[in-house]
Picture 1: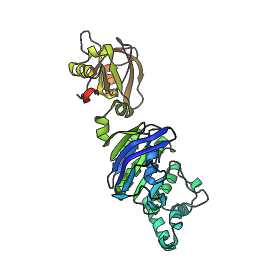
Picture 2: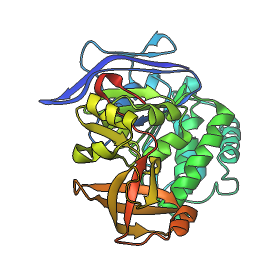
Picture 3: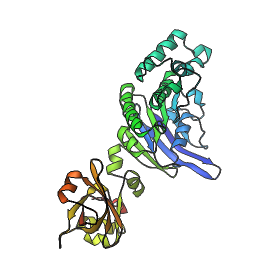
Picture 4: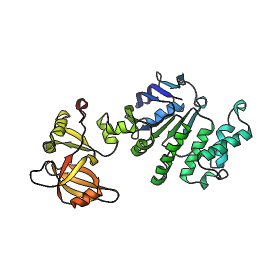
Length: 349
């Protein structure tokens, strides 16, 4: 089931939450709405679900069918909240069965069918044997999977997830989001999830919709938005980035200096796209001093200060390179840009 949103605008008094947003989610895809707090992503998700109404003029379609005025209960949407929203007084089984039991009489399955569907969902979300437990007897990751099973119990057309892993610790988040990717590959249900976690979106989504200040900045695959950001905001939002400017540009190789001049004196460089070399008189590169060196983990992260401009630069390099160069705090080094990006007239090198 595909999802289309056309010219969606939503205001709360004088505050504009969404400003003419368009969105297309292909059938069977896992799409992330990614952006900082206040960018409009949760509001858009709630409008798709029917939990909020857009301002007049916008349209929501499911597989070509207009649902703009259709109430949430008739849209057949599975919605999973950040904080689980499980019923504490009900067992896992009864939580999952809840949506089936409250259907209108003529649509409500029989008890044997409900039991069979719940058992099947427990197996699907890998919670077999926990049907008689209560939410307070489960881990955070297990509770979120119960919430997902409950959303799937009503056989939704689409699945909507609002920051589904936000309440979990880092290790459980990583485990559960990888599980969600495998789970989606099994069921192929059109899914939209909201997140402000760049790593999460880039790791599991088929397509990423980056939002900022009530608008969509860019739509693309994870590789497209990371490698070919459409704006300085996207570049800086998706991971660390250095903005090189001013006197340092004279020490850049010709192609990067030309890009910087085309972009009013600024180029954007990822920390891993800068090479570090020992200082040699007359050698090319930006002269800098190592101020901080963090060597825990697989990468060595360097905080440097450019000698000429006094501006900071962050660099990531491998432990092998750092050890081979015998890098230490207060060392004088040369920085060489491997790859950069500028945004004047979409100048790209």
